[in-house]
Image (cartoon, chains in turn blue, red):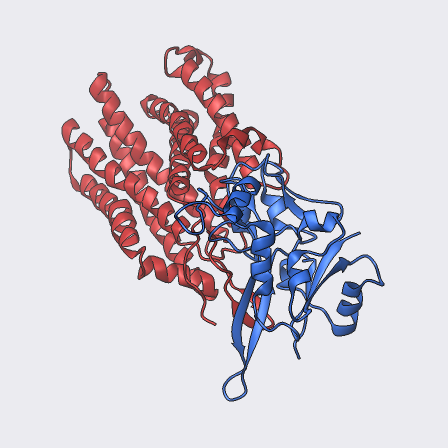
Length: 201
Length: 313
């Protein structure tokens, strides 16, 4: 069992629903994004087009963040998820610098979204997220444990995101990677991400 | 898409300050033990070096702890020496400080016991000298292990930190000897001149290494952006005034002037030692400051397009 995600760049329209759904589902604090969509121009005018590239934590098979963590707070679970045990994290932030994909974040002091007071979302966020420790996308492990898909996958308007078991030869993610030539981001780094992209051409 | 040339904002000034004190303390101690092992000069140099080293490193670790968001968990930080430079560093520092304090207590103050036990003392010199060396060098390896920041990911960094540690160590030992001589009655001003000679030569080497470090970084986009930031961007004033002028040029010039004086009196030697040490040590901090504050992330390669990761909060 090795959880992985596939993002079909042909279908992604850069609407950022995944970004917002992730924020809402995980009560991600102000200023932090666990899911980001990069937008840039491909080709040169007049033969150019917009490209959209959603990036979240790659849940690498050989993660840099786990290697550099001195306390063992960053760990890779048997089912492939790379998680942070916030009880053990001392907030040295070495892992934030070590991640080549910029997937990790931390915040020093909780700030409400609107300044005047805490919204219900803020209240949930203060319960869920600890100040000072490192946090990142966890493939919505609460939802996955209940048999649901991660929030970004479930909410994707263009059905561009897929989630499943990379070890299962019959799963949608494996089939898509094999049939459409799924590629990883910066494979030369040797991190072996569990997030694959399907080309948009 | 343009590379975002904003430096990392994860580590603030406390980390470069710790790196500076770690290097300085390790350097002082190394100078102390090297003089004890290989020189028959007045043991004043060795004793000052050994006395300064461990307390300076200990103070450095306080800044390290202050940078942690949850220092209560630092006990666990020794658990991953097989993969993490932070774990290795904490173990190295702890051994160095414990052995160093032991060395001070048994040789400098309050006891002089190790003076009569030369072999035991020299064994301690070698063992803790190795840990002092590791304390200095591991700081460069810690930064060098971060592949996402090309400006740091170079073997020149531990070498640069080593030379800088020796240079600042010599300055600090000179300053320490000056103060010691004011308090006591030992006359060590000829030793000061010798230390200044070594330091003047080391500063030349340090300048060369900094040149090669900055020169070599132009090959990668992110390190090129870092170097531009340091030489011409918002870290330029700190670099040119804080490091090059205070840390290199001024101590070098004072060292040369001291050599041209035929027989300076004790007072002059002391003043020169202070005029070398104060800007020189300040420069040693600023070197690490610009290196840490100038670290810029390498872009990700997205099907041939270089995309910069968003700066972390």
